[in-house]
Length: 510
Image (cartoon, rainbow, N blue to C red):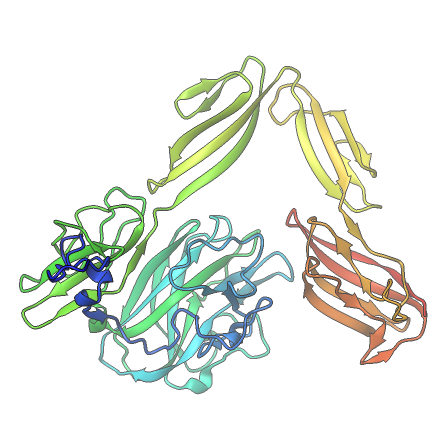
């Protein structure tokens, strides 16, 4: 039975008997403190389509593909990024974000390949006024997402969006007319999202912005990639009562903060329920993962902050080690000398839990293991040995552990099938020239077919081999081509991260 007592919005219990506590009860509704962004759709949730592949920022409402080098749009409704570039979870806001590169080094190397997103503002940034650009940047692994500078660029005219048309190596906006740097911030992370902000006071009215890497070309052995989410641009005053923290989420000193005013009263909440005793501008400590808010009251009104989602990152790793007999392996505080499976909790530099499962193998006659895949017809070199066929065998070499000189080689073929004949006669069998593979084959990056004069008759890129049969149906521009021998060139991305080029001939029979 509902109680006649009114709901007390600060004690963490049901007062009126309706089953709803504190901020979850309509009786405790206050005005939400929320900056109104000059860039609409800050979290990329509003869309006109679901992305099916890379480079489809045009699906996100308002946002403009600022550079010729294309930013990626990720949404859980469709394409959600590259298999080898994990998106840090959970997303800060909603089900969408964008991804961008800083340089390209794996395929078609271009150090000045820089990807930017941009927008024309709802109203200009006025000269002499303070504005804050607050956003989340997502870091994948430390190799894929090293520390970086994020730069906020501005233009006095929207006509300068996009820039560098026709030139994917154009680089940053400053390499063309109409742009200037408004502010920048240097950030680092690993498998997490970092919230940060840039505060500026423009010297002239700004009508368009672009966000992305700095102008300096980078050098790396792999593609450099990051993510953006919840890009909010508003006058600085509207950010005053936004929850902040200047510590890493795993730090024991991590706290949530609000500006402190003696004339205001504060009450903190977790998942809408009051945290009894937490009535200061700073939360005294964290109360576990959850959604945190604060209710701020004055003699005239009450306001509630936007929710701050806190999730302490934790990592799980599996490691395999082998040592020579008579040796010891140090695993945290233990010295191990026997084969077996071990598990312990380590701590990252920021204080996050990192649970490591170790499989230790003590080998009496030391053997290095080398697992390699090649295509049929290729040769793998191991010391002075040259192997062309699948094999599982020991070879006499110098062990990487410095024990004895044996290497166990597990050499196998990639599981990829490229036929040499197809019959596009509409009988439902062998009608399409397609490339088949199991999980070895991640993506058909480029697929071209040529006639005997060297003209391209089929050209398709970025095919997902796991999404059914896709390939050439024997037609060109809607018309069937005559029987005969055609040549093909393909670029395949394999599960081990390697890009492999294959060429050959296909016989079209009708």
